[in-house]
Amino acid sequence: MGGMPGRERQPGGTPRAALADLLAGNRRFVSGQPIHGHDVTAAAAAASGDQQPYAVVLGCIDSRVPLEAIFDQTFGAICVIRTGGHVLDRAVCGSIEYVVGRLGVPLVMVLGHERCGAVGAAVDALRTGERPGGSLAYLVDEIAPAVTEIGFDDPAVHPLAIRRHVRRTVRTLRDDDLLAGPVAAGRVAITGGLYDLATGEVALLDPG
Ligand SMILES: [Zn+2]
Image (cartoon, rainbow, N blue to C red):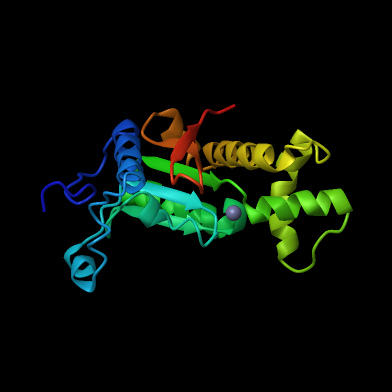
């Protein structure tokens, strides 16, 4: 099983190494030379044995952004959480706390993407003053501060709010009760990224 990232990894790897592996997977995807793309079979799933993931990626539900594929990851390598606009709630935070605290994962990436419809919905709600009903209101309310910080009348509010919302989500997670300690100790890194639908590339976002 040599050369298959995520397979032989020992618990307690560094955040830096985990990030390098994740970004290397994205480069394989972008170059059209994934090493796991051919291996999405039940046999590969069965061969994964006990899971030893090295990263958790929180992304959007957008159907154009399948996280295992864009990072070229095999079974057992990364934990994936997806909500509209990567909005946090207690279930999401609890899941990340579990992966970090119980599975020893050293890296959390929050991945936004260009043309995000959830962020667009928050922009529309603030511009029109019409808050959606149901639980969609929760998503919009959670994204709204990023839009407000940019200013909903800014012509570039949509792309700018997408980036701001990633950074806000990263900061919220860094302050999480069970994550703040490991982050302060340097055992865990929580970082933000942005996926470009046109190129397939993931760019890191500085904390801003
Ligand atoms: Zn989205």
